[in-house]
Image: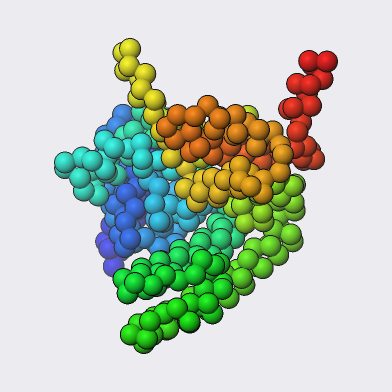
Length: 369
């Protein structure tokens, strides 16, 4: 009995000694089991192990050791894992998976190789991981409300497109109307041969429209009660509670940007670069960052440039670009307005200043006078 106890004590001491050597840990997160690689200051592997991908197992593995630098990749589990590890005092680097092509395009790709690569890059130069910062748990939870709404809107759109296409194949067309009015107005147009197959879809479209309205009310209430800063952003024509709330929740901490101009690039609304030698090709926008907020901003830009858009600096800027003509002039104008809109929204948020639609125009007129 004494020998067994002494062996256990020796094993624990040896384990503590090994953990003292560890400086950096790379974790390849998987859905069930995550592979971990711990290396010392010289890059030598101290030990490798696997841990179940759940909070209890991670707490048991990393909650009792001294602060380490831990590198993980962005993914489904990275938000809660990063928050949990940081609560234990570890320095967590969440690597941007888009920038780690040397890892996920490796011909010898497996969990162990990925974990080693993460650990070694984090030891040598963490900036190569292009680390990102996940939003807080509250912001993530509230953002899921908006994403759930978007999912239902997409499902309704697919159903409407299917119904319209099916009716066209029988030589008829459904009337042009809003999605909410379609179930009522389509009944008189649907051929008798399609009634059995399409009427259940119309009922489903109607139910989805009701659910979307419930989501809209919940979004407006959430913005009003818990995110009062969105009221300032909604002063901009074309920006509603949905866009304002999505913008605030996605950025989460506006102070992370020293300049408002950086927001446009962060949301992928600036042209990509492929400069090599004397080549300077004109590239489309990079489309990095959150695609949902980018899509909402583009929708707001289309409204600003549309028939119902009010006169403003944003509208004048877009119309000048569209007036140049050429291929895709209107698309370029929309993207340019969306980029400027993102900068404006961040500026209003940070300065808490009132929105003046023609602020720049007035400044220019004053200088000219």
